[in-house]
Length: 114
Image (cartoon, rainbow, N blue to C red; front, side):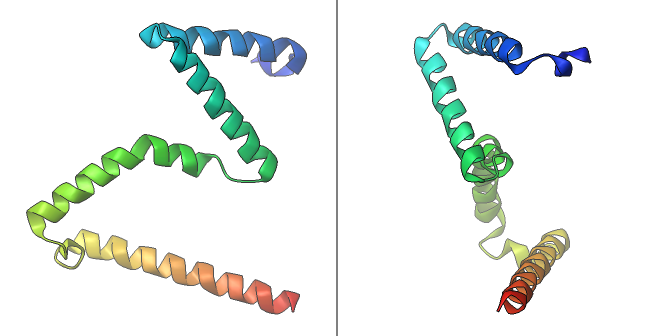
């Protein structure tokens, strides 16, 4: 656990070497190394600009699966499956309540600033 105390000037090149080796080792393709640097640059820019990186990565990883299974559920149960299954209805209502509270808190913040 002492690795966190290492100087970034020492740790960064070591991590960079492992990233390059790992990206190349998967398919033995240099394009994978380039893509690793592109997405690293994207993450660095997102951090500098204040954008959250975790939701974007979750979207990349889970987006295709979520879309596929969403389409399967629409094909098997119809387009209104949200209103036919109790668990889907509960999740839908929780999402609506969460969005409503988020909008309400944003409106309160605007009123306080005005």
